[in-house]
Length: 294
Image: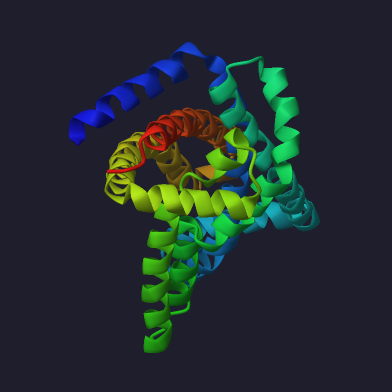
């Protein structure tokens, strides 16, 4: 089975490199996503940073600096409003751009045509986004992190619920992987698309599982490279805060610039990853739909 991945991976890379429109479609949503993730990380890790600050750890100084900057510039209200605006924009734009990307990959027409056509898929794609959030790996690990790491929960019943949730999440994510392609390519409502995706994935469960494992390995490689890209500048920012270099205005300006560049660069790199996997799963979908039986 390993050799069957190679043509799909090769085609996905060629399509992404040869057609910049795919990356353009993914960039805007990825940028919003990156900004929201940064804000959510600040909000969710604030408690951890405060705990480290109280314990005398240097890690807490990051939170201290962020809180001081927000308070000194009276940005609390702006911070909250910005988070809400970004979330609303992302909720509206993401389903449209996802539909436009699949439409563009399938019909190979003008980018503007795909964007206009994607509006009619907004509602089922929005519904699917909400449904997917219930089984999101990111959501699962964030909640588990907050419950067991930040709040130090030792409730065995709660632990059992998370174990069951993990297996349900894994199984559902495997079966729903083709849903958005049925929505856009076959113009089906959410329920019919979910049902068809479950049927297609079930009839090709071995192949789908192998493609998902390949995606996991590729995503791990991409993530390591992305972490290396982001990690070194973050270390510089951390050292600037720890050694009080942040008290100088030019160091603070440097930190602000680095954070913005990280958000932009992270979104740009992530847009390539999203574009790659959009075409990857499109190729898998068309291949299995043509011959779903194993």
